[in-house]
Length: 229
Image (cartoon, rainbow, N blue to C red; front, top):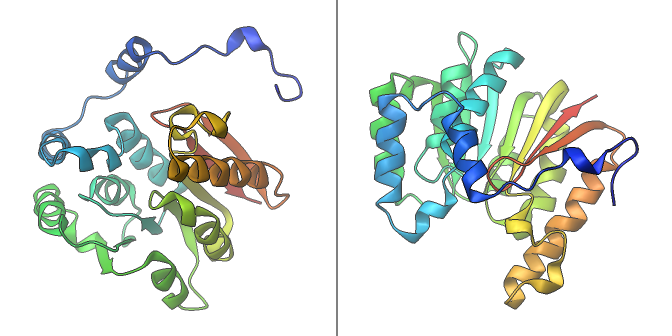
């Protein structure tokens, strides 16, 4: 259902052709980013976990606009989101990035080093919830980015919100879940259906949270930007 003041005619479906046009109309990836994307695509099916090139540009831009000194990146994979945030950090800033799987850490570290940002990135192996709970009580994040296992998004949000400073950004990737959030019952398997139901409920909860100003962008598989009031 359209929100108050919305005009349906201005909402265009993001077709594959339009998605390609949007990507081509954004800043092209630099050589290090292009290499990391190419090497990630070569991993096969796992490459679906990678943020898109235009998202990487947006993450750098958001970090720079926020003057970010502390970023928490939940879901490292091959390190593209951590690399992107690190490039936008204020002087002396740090990205804490975590993942349950170290298989791609060498690939990530290679490109962090090539980009000259390895000293700004702190990789932590283990469950994201454990990493978040282990942060000092005094820790405050400028940005928290969630791009990990979808069923655990609600728990990650609950742990992340107290960490955000006023004016800080909570970013959630894959909030459209290939469109199934609008109609979870259309999902063709039980796990996808549960993920879509979980994500749809979380999207509604975040939009109604009076601690946040929220906008959902139809970039890639959907990206929510929520600013802590």
